[in-house]
Length: 296
Image 1: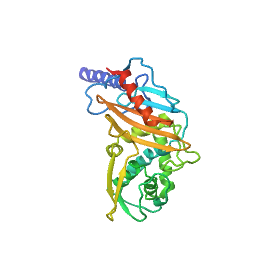
Image 2: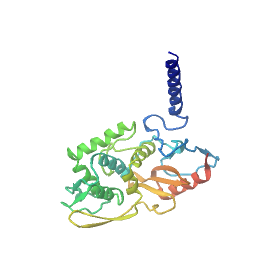
Image 3: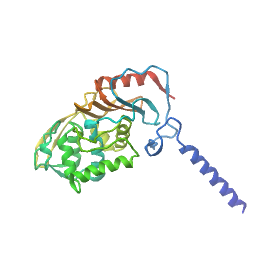
Image 4: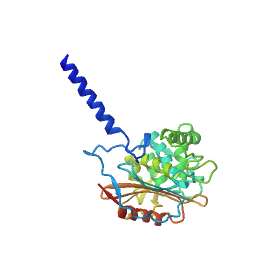
C-alpha cells in the first residue's frame, strides 16, 4: 500500500510540473497558434528583452512582428484591421496544396494560362510535379500556378477555395476570408497583419515551403521538357539574414510583404499590409529589432 501511495504522489507531482510547463506565458500568442517548442531545445528559448528604442515610423496600415521561438510580440500596428492581402494569399494556397499533393504528384495546366498579373508563363496542357508547381507559385508569384493547383484538386477550384477558408478556421483565425486562390482584387477577400503572420508561421513548419520561399532563382521543367526560369519577386532575398517569405501588390491592397529574418539564430516573422515602401520598411523593422532587443 505504501508503494502505491508513493507512486500516486509521484504521478501527482509529474502532472503539476506538466501544468506549469505548458501554461502560456503572459504576452505570448495563446491557444491554437502558440508556437511549437523545437525538439532541439534542452532549455526554454531565450526571451527578447526590449531596450526601449523607439520603433520606426511606418506607412503600412497593418504591422505584426513576432519572435518565432517564444511567441512574444515585438511590434504591432492595427494587427487585427482587415486589409487586402494581394499575393500573400498564396501562402495559404501553398498550405492547402502541401496538405493534399505529394511532391511527385502530376499537375496539369488546364486554364491557368489565362491568368493575368504575375505569372510563371505556364503553357496549356503541360504537366509538372507538384513541387515544381509550388516553385512557380511562390518564387515568381504565379497566378497561373495558383489556378492550376486549384483546378487539379479533387472537386476543382471551388473545393480548393473552400479548403483554404476551412484552414483559416482550423488555425483559429477570425479576420481572414479568401474569395480567390491568387490574391487578385475581389470582394470579401481580406486578412490582417496578425492573421497572415499566423498563416505564414504555420506554412514555415513545412520544410519544403521554407526552402521554396528562400529561393531567389530557379529553373523548373515540365514533364514535356520545357524549361521555365523563375525569379523571386522578393528583392530582399540574398541580404544577410533574410530567408523569405512572400510579396504581394495590387492597386487596392498596396504593397504587402511577409519576411522571415534571423540574426544570431533568433527567427523573427514580420508582416506588412498596405505599405508605401514594403522593402524599405521591412529593413527598418529588422534594423530596429536588432538594436532594440537582447535575447536572455
